[in-house]
Image 1 (cartoon, one colour):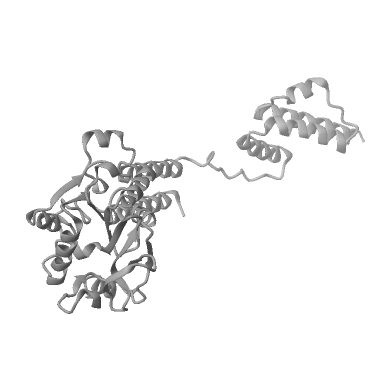
Image 2 (cartoon, one colour):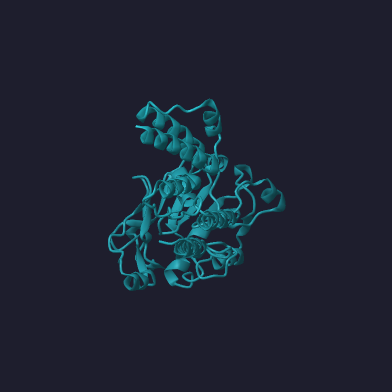
Length: 363
């Protein structure tokens, strides 16, 4: 692979990685945010709760148990994870008798969702065994609908809740009370006690703008709203809404800019490393002639390219004395060998050759 091909391959790889990251990262308006009018947003649920008389607040700063109302709604996926301090405050909120609604994504959980689930005593495990691997079939599967049937304890008048297929479902403690079940009769919406409070786990898609018009989904929202108490809060800080003082002190800014900056730096380093020369250009050694002069010229050119003239001169003197004890090298020639360049090396070699030739003629 030549240098140009290597540089082009590096550019293509970096471009693909950057494109995948940008494509897979949700935009600022994506996700189940109570401010999002998109299909997966919770704007309609928030507007409904307000219209029904609930006091709705949007959190724009880290969780503070002392400032939370009766119920807190967490919806995933989101942009930032709860810090260690916030998870402790969440436990205090539950111990004080609060209600937490955990809207899980139903997809492979990101760290933010996983950390929040662990703080609430939930596990998020892949349960769906029939996810197709073919891109076309997977797309059809992802666009299909799943019906969650009400538990018998809800009565015969309760309607099914419609959600998108759940690749991952949340599961709680054994004491959890199921409210709606999936086709495999596994609890998909359930409630359980946590401290003196309670946790309600449900797919975030159940309360999304695109589903809330379904009779069963609307019934679910109303029953939850009625059980919350007079006030509830949506955690919008997790979705990027931040008060000026909160954003200035927060160390959890979105990491996409940092990822892009790292990719640009990696791209620049790859181009720089592949574009610069890997050492001096290689030159073929000259063809050696049969004469001593031609041989020495070729040998000198070889050592010149490698910068070994001084070492070669010293080795030549040592070898000449070892193989021909009759040749005596004077101190002047030895001094010339130290730091010798190509011309000095060639002169020493010619001088030794003449001494050896003179001895051969005398014998």
